[in-house]
Length: 320
Ligand code: ASP
Image (cartoon, rainbow, N blue to C red):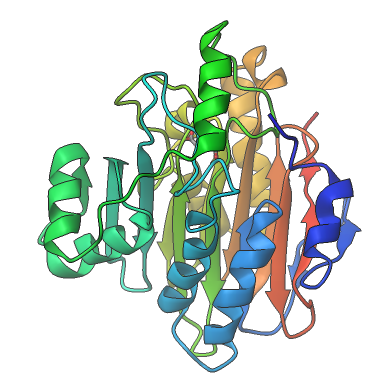
């Protein structure tokens, strides 16, 4: 299992990002458009999102285009193609998307489709529903013209077989057995959107769904206030309906940074012991273009792209 989180490996991203640590820095205000996304692979996603945002495109199109980047990358073992499987060896994907009108769509436990975020968008645009799961989501995707593909790569299969030797389910903070791309953006028309996509916790029980496809948990957008997204152990995010909480905390007058910190503090309060061992991170962006990030543990990185910030990876401040 590799440790992609390590900054040392950022060399590969040198053309699109540089690393700046922002311990203790307050929320930053930048001019619109802005896109922010989770983890180092957010920098690759931001590049695609920025092409759309900088051409006065819609935030919704930008976040979808961004999320598709790690989804399609077989080397990213926590999202889409090449995602680590569940304990039965099946790659099951979760994703959601939300726009400035509170339209939203989601899929969970979707197999065989490389771009669940685009299926989620179709659910939003082509059905009377918000959420399709499992076989129904797959059937819908195929009806919409998505191709059925094998998502388990040789590397992921090898990692799974290795895992089977001990078969211990204990997610370790900031390493490859979990991760999600959560991406939120505001466009030049001042509209917000967000998307989230993941293969979920590696070696989860078959049928397990985390926070990532759940509107309000891993993603929430309120075009009057702001947008938020999350990554980390989804069960803990669901318990506090994390992203909705972050947006509501911003509505109450908190900055994006304060809102992320308060949401993380809620997890600590609920689970004082467990919160020391797991990772959860939040990103938030408000209507003014201010953003914030906060995590339980050190090591949560995120990428920001705006006119002032040329696609830079930051490390979030953390509770522990
Ligand atoms: N939140 C994802 C899940 O629980 C995993 C992650 O972001 O690390 O499925």
